[in-house]
Length: 278
Image (cartoon, rainbow, N blue to C red):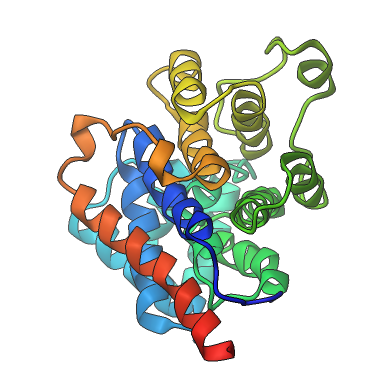
């Protein structure tokens, strides 16, 4: 997992920033709710992460009040709620949607994996891929989720931005050559295809001086679908910390206390692990 010496306040601020930033970038609400289900599960399970238990939480939330999950997760959760076995539900959805299951929902909801110090760095990518497969059959969805989680963890640890992008690139390319060279956004997409969402998000974080600017530009770009601003918020929080994240939208006020509590508790796992190893 790397050295767990007593972490400076900067680490805790960056850990909190991931979830607070995601919430600030989420104008529709579903990604925040799903990320909260994962965050609260991580706090409950500690080191004993089991995908089947997490799936039960997702399905229970969906059947109770689920919304804005994207069409892939919506179909999977609906099928499971009707008694279809989870893996069969995922595969049926994959074929029903003509194999178009490489959406960004897993990358949106998985960022709390980067926040838990109980999860070793070297296991994060595999965990993200397994978590994505709970709903999205296409492995691209998992690779993008892995790239986002690895990127956020590296930023939490204080690594240089370019080094963090290089780590993420081993799972999915984070920048289009055109945007990288020109400093403009001619080739980034507003769609929900996970690799495109990641490239758009990285573009806005890469070319902005602070989280507020990155979020504002990405929200103007994204429109109602709001795909890339969710990741812009999470990545910005990991890069610059919670103390620089702007306030969440009024739509998120109902869950803001849960977001803050989960972010604080996951930040505390870093102190706990440092004390246990020291």
